[in-house]
Length: 289
Length: 247
Image 1 (cartoon, chains in turn blue, red):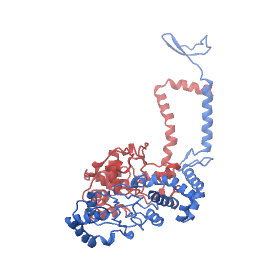
Image 2 (tube, helix red, strand yellow):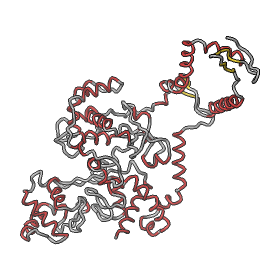
Image 3 (cartoon, chains in turn green, orange):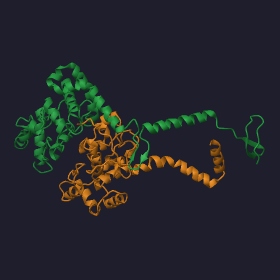
Image 4 (cartoon, chains in turn yellow, purple):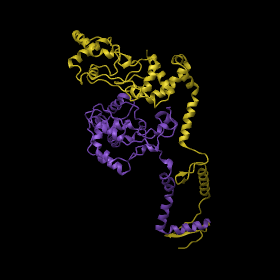
């Protein structure tokens, strides 16, 4: 092993030799030193400015006091401030005033669409059309359809566990043996006859169902079957059925009962967002008619 | 000085064991500086005195979540970014994963994040959505999990699962472990006498409901829905942070 100077490049060799091949001990290129220096200076700056070094039970906070959580809190606040121009107006005006204000309603439709998509679409569908078991928001009005009622339903939910929750339950007339199988068929025939042709069901069956209805159903759905808003009992004469409307599905409701559930959004959405959603739903209904 | 450094390095390069030890020391610097201090820094895990444990039924649901690979498409981690906070709710806190062994933060969102899914939709929605996701969400690519509704939940090993969780630091009591099976039945059957024990052992706020709508049959659907309905609801701590769009 012998270190010697290479006559061509002028550098020393490493001293190793493999079958006559020797390796030059070329110095580290300047550009590498340059970038090593730059990254070290960058690191020094970062240590000073950003949270960096552990100190037992705490750490150096850095001169910039950077904090992701504070940053996102601030950016959410700024975003709220940026739209406060119209949201303040939204909160101070009545529903009727807002509905007359086309500029405000344009904001409601734009913001509402995102809010509705994030929170409501899973059950009520992209355009509020609902799904079997989940009401069509454009047609259903279990508790009433005024903006105030819709706002309250969004706030407290239905059978939700919220302290002010709306409570509604259709009993399981079949399973709990409140009605016999034949009576269920009869009342089904009667109820279907209210919204359309009775079809193949004989008139005497419909007539018998009417008596069953008066004795068992009228207390919630009303003598005229048009529903009662205070108990969330739907109007049975419109031809719209939230469970789908097939004879089998309605029979299932009569047999097993129905206890729909809507979550309370009070803890999840701000008053502004809930008001936007209320107006969005009212708007969906009006545009559907 | 450089010359001395190089001379030292030349010397070190020729010591096989010594060089390996030196490599190990240098490569562990990052870990020592960045990871080890987290165990002593107080702010790492926030305080959440109201944090409750997963019930046996929820833990069984969690195991199903792992078994079915839900974490491959769903994350459980809301980052400190405005769009995530506005869409899903308050950003995730470290303390919320305190009893997660293994953690299921995930890193891929083919489906939405689930960290705040608890109480967002009804039990009925979850069951219908598991049976046929596209009936409720037409563009969904989630597979159907209808079979969960027919699979009876295995409960004979629930006590062992609790014991295993206790071995890694989750404070399950002997009583909880002894009653794991009964509590699983009770939580999904509000009318049974077993349901009282669940509220007694896990707190009044525990959800006791017939999650899949069939109180007399304890299924894997009960377990997974019970688990989803508690996600983000083990503690109220994250809802007290300022960065929420709620009040």
